[in-house]
Length: 253
Image (cartoon, rainbow, N blue to C red; front, side):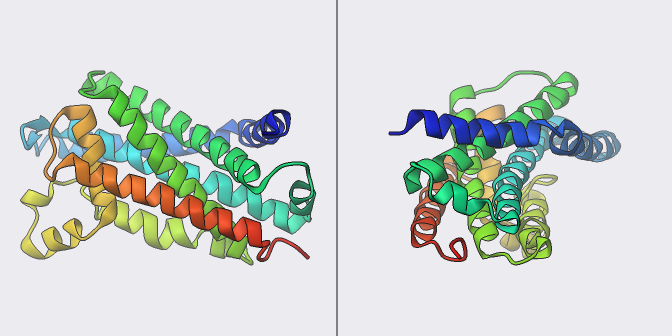
C-alpha cells in the first residue's frame, strides 16, 4: 500500500472543502437548523410526542442522516467532476496509486465531511433535546457505512455527469424527496395508508429508523433492516465505483 500517496490525496481532498467552511460546513448546518427550528419547535408545540418521544428529539436522527447523506455525496461528486473539467483527473490516474487507493482516499475524505457535518448538526440539536445516545457505537458504524455508500454514489455520478446539473440530479430529485418521505418528520405508523405504504417501500426510511433506534433506543421497523440496507448500499456502490474507475470510463482521454 502506498501510504504516503493515499495520505496526500486524502489531505488534498480534506483541504479542498475545509478552505470554504462557509459553503461546506456552515451552509448545511444553517439549513438543517432551520428545519429543526421550524418543524421541531413550530410543530413540536402541537405534536407533543411521537411514539412516546418528544417531537423535536424524534426528528433529530433523521436530520443528521440527511446531513451525512447529502454532504458525503456532494464532496466526492463535486471534487471528481471539477477534476474532470480541469483535466487533472488524469494526473491522479497515472500516479503510483492503485485504483483501490484512489477510490479509498476520495471516499474517506467524503465520509469525513459527512460525519463532520452530521456531528455538528447532532451537537446543535442535542443542545435542545439532550445528549443521550442509546447505542453510540452502532450509530457511528451505521453513519460511516451510509456515508461511504453515498460517497461512492457521488463518485459514480461525477464519472458519468457531463454538467453540474447532472451532478445535482441525484440529491435534488432522488435523495431529498426520498428523505422527506422516509419518516424524518413523521412516523409511518401515524401516516395514512397510502403514505404508509410509500414510506415503507423507501430504503431511506430504514436507514433513518435504524439511526433513530441507535439514538433513541426505539424504532418502528426492526433496526437490522436499516443496517442491512446500509451494508448493501456501501458494498454495492463501492464495488461498482471501483469497477468503473478501473475501466477508465469517461475519465481517460
